[in-house]
Length: 199
Image (cartoon, rainbow, N blue to C red; front, side, top):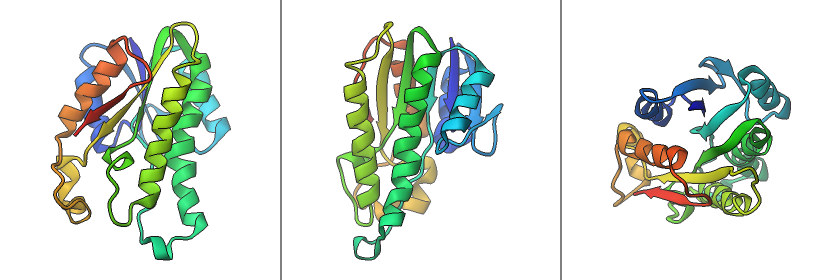
């Protein structure tokens, strides 16, 4: 398959690349690195990405930022930053990308455990992740041409644990390589509208 991997240079993206690249052609994209540059916050940038790649068999998004901070100090603008980046960025990739998928192709988006397990200072992350999952479940009902859409929801990653463990008391991190298996399941499998939890 010809797979577009957005966010290929991140910790999770590198693990997905390692998992899939032996069996598939990977087109790596990112805001500042990769074979193609793309800003998921901009319609024109995403459209240009697909003009450059041509038709693909799968789209995988392993990117997106959210705002972490105390609710009492959070501004609407800070909350909106997560909406524009991780939520609308991935939704934009799916909405535009569906028209550039070969029949039977797939879209895989990324959320995280915070969609269901809130933490202190994580209101934006919980809202954004839950919204991405809701979008994918609904979009799966409407996609034609045998297209599929799923979400992978990993726990905090072992590779990033030292920087985040204080925010995730009692959580058990997972290796990025384990999370990457769920992306293979989404890309190569038959299901649609699923949230694959790697907790």
